[in-house]
Length: 439
Image (cartoon, rainbow, N blue to C red; front, top):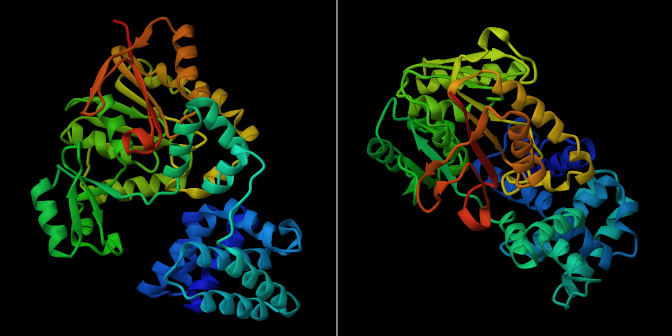
């Protein structure tokens, strides 16, 4: 697994040292280094495990290393993080292999002088890892044990209370089942399931979403016949619920103002039976090509993609849309379980997001016809990005009001807006708000 470890190390350097996005960095490196299926699985588990558990790993290193973690070179620090992760969280890896490979990696990176340090620290960790841990206070304990920055822990405890905050933070570290939606424009749920099972995929009906499944054992999704045929799309339940809240009818004119990567537009096209028109906008041109490719694979012909800034009004569209959806840029704190590096965002850097979100929502409202629907959504759980934005919008726009809508049980009737939580609903953390413009 030397190539897998080396690939993971390079990926960690790009994420921690250069600010790369974990999912994009890892996939690019694994393809470049031509990892096999087993190597890819090990590399993925190790890489994401270190990203997810960085705070825990650094705390352990700080406890068992004579040299402060922050004074270690980036390469040595990541080599140690990888090895400690294997010692603590990968019981199938022999201790000797984890330690020896780390020492060899240090030597290979011309860090011979550090190899002795790496060996000594890891032997110390291995020998003393059963000792009881002592923390300064309960917040530090929760931060270290769940590997979340203290500022985020304090924020969640303030929102939820200590007990439920811990449940939320621990949910961020749990494996996430892959949820797929049947493309009802091309096939049926029954046919999709049969096709997937024929290729060895484990398929379970989603417990409360029609035409959706959780799947495992897929391998490379794009290698499946059902994927090539466009019979399904990957989409978390929360994102699907946004399309159900929008509830566009066949023949509707829909504007999706921040549409990339296109999942909600695809789901709404299925709600509309492929009839009507969906204008899917984004301000990054390369994302338009991705949406076009997705729509083509799924056989969606009612969708048009357009380069547009959600804050800038196109007067030609004023009061023309039956439904407008704003899935705005946000802190992403509801999807940490899928993108673990999000947890390390500086909380202070998020302060400017509500102004951007409000500007997009304000502009999007201009496109809604009288009696039409406006949906605002985020993949975060922070009130300042969610209900505070929509409450302020309604105070400034008396011609709009919250609109009651129905979602599948166990959620049921929603009085205008709802925040979904992984520890409560088993979905991504997500905010969905439906408003209507008065006639």
